[in-house]
Image 1 (cartoon, rainbow, N blue to C red):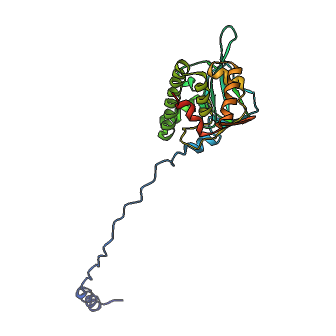
Image 2: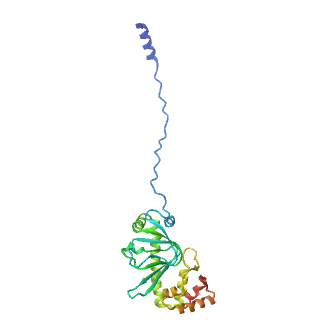
Image 3: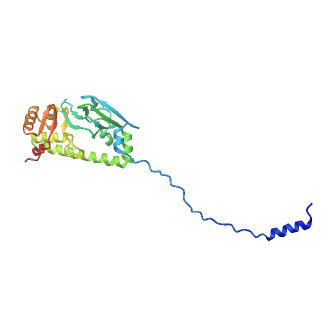
Length: 250
């Protein structure tokens, strides 16, 4: 049993102990790392080269119909490889070629402007691979992805300028100049990428329809261009840059 003397002695010892000072260690405040909420960079070419949500790859042999005049217009089509001709037929059955398209070109974009049916028939001119993009998916990427909208708008403006140039060419230039210009365009001279120079599977009849003349006139000028070294013609048409002299000559 603890006595009073022992208790008082313990209290006196406790009271004599001085409290120790607490050592404060400075702590650097670091805010939590911010979450990266930005979506990955949109790759336009990857989008156009691969299937995915709202877009499918389709392959065609030569002379196959992609869509026909009067079909429902509900998608936009991008050509990955091959070629497509667009033709229009009037009420009397007369057919006209309005465009020949190749890799990197879009067609069927009229559905974005309110067209409910196709205004032309699209037919392949060689083995062709296309990316079929649903209308709603095209509208989505146009609104959300600036890289895609910039490319698509630039293509559309260039296509409109081409239509105006075609009209002027048809109205004011000779059939020889029209043929030379058409061959250069088909070979993609003047494009930002490297010109393909070789035009496969384009018949003289097709060229005659495009420039508004007869096959015999096209045959005459093709032989002339070949003799002058502007083209090599052996089933495929190899176009040389020197053909520009025909277009530029007054």
